Image 1 (tube, protein in one colour):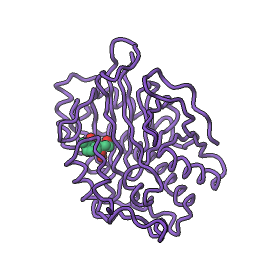
Image 2 (tube, rainbow, N blue to C red; image 1 turned 120 degrees about the vertical axis):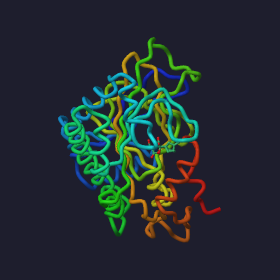
Image 3 (cartoon, helix red, strand yellow; image 1 turned 90 degrees about the vertical axis):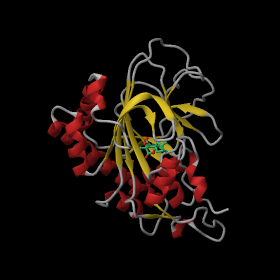
Length: 323
Ligand code: GA4
């Protein structure tokens, strides 16, 4: 079922469109088709009845809030984010900045339990909250990827989810905290940006936020659409690797986060990624004489290196285009 979203937040140069909201409890083949349509048209959709327990989401949210409430000197002990750990206003290594602080963690269980020691006074509690959350959203991510495989009528429907389920998957988790700004006002293009325009390099991103607006997605025609926040839903973003593997049929969506609220925004993202040594290339099912390969094969480690050598907003997939 596609539910038209409510009216967008106040903001300049944006448009009200019905962002697809997909009910995962409905008929499988119908959902698979709706998801593929949403990924082609927007590279983005929301899911309801997703099956991730509220309690698991709430525990990570609480852990995030209590970490960000600590004095700066305490938080710095978990930083700098290089790329993993605590980061404040710096994004990546090439001068990108945003009005936010964040925790960025690799999803590898050993790495989580190591990092937790610098993040929380109760590292076991923190690492359990993160691990349970990862387990929940990884399942959701794989379920959606299998539905995409079905909706695309792929021979190997689990080709995407297998990369995420691999023990060596390079998936990461991020908790972003956008502090409140003092006045409620119309967003101004000169305002400091929370997290600048970009696409996600990975296969699929699963985002959950509190009830504070700020997220916007960019349509093919360049218009920005505010995404109404709903803590009970998850937002799903097509990443660059999925665009490449589907030979450009699914679109990796450009998005950004604005800061213009009286209340702090907290978002939690799971970035589903392949193992470092995995090869990314257009799937044979997605290539034909009419639709030749748009991208040359590349390894995930090569793509990551390219991403970290460029600016946040750069179109890094263009580097891998054939002609
Ligand atoms: C965008 C998606 C994820 O948040 C992220 C980001 C990463 C980072 O913040 O360290 C990057 C950015 C993201 C894309 C280009 C590079 C890498 C910052 C940056 C300038 C964790 C990711 O994987 O890529």
